[in-house]
Amino acid sequence: MVVLDASVILKWFYPARTEPGADVAREFRERFLDGHLTIVVPCFAMYECASSMRHSQYRLPPCTVKEHVRDLWGLGLTVVRVTRRLLWTATEVSFVHGGSVYDAYYFATAQFSQCPCVTADRRAHRHVKSIPWIHLLRDVSDVSAFDD
Picture (spheres, rainbow, N blue to C red):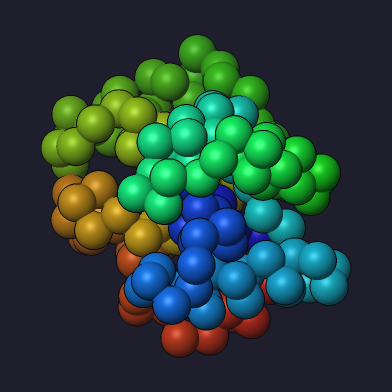
C-alpha cells in the first residue's frame, strides 16, 4: 500500500519523454492494475490532478483532460475523504516541518493509512525528507518494495 501524491499520478498522463521519473510512476500504476499494490489518495487529489491537467504546460484540449479524468476515476484508487483528524495532523506536520498544509495532507494520509508516501515534488519533499516513510520518486528504485 502506498499514498501517491498528484505529482506522481500526473506522470501517468503526460508524455513520458518529458517527465522525469515517468517510468517509475507508471510502474506504480502497473503494479496496482496487476493487483500487487493498493494506491491511496486523499479525495482532493482528483481535483488537483484535473486542475493540473487543465493548466499544464502541455496545453491539453478539454476532451483530453476529460478523458484523463474519467480514466483516473475509473481506476478505482482508494480515496480517503477529508477528516478533521487528518487535517489536524497535516496542519501539525506543516508547522513542525514547514511547507504547506496542502502538501502535508498527503503525508498525514500516509501516516493514518500506515503506509509510505511517494512524491515527485522536490519542494514539498525538502521539508519532510527527515521522515523515513516519505519518499521522493526519483529515489525509488524498486516499486515492488511497496507491494501489499
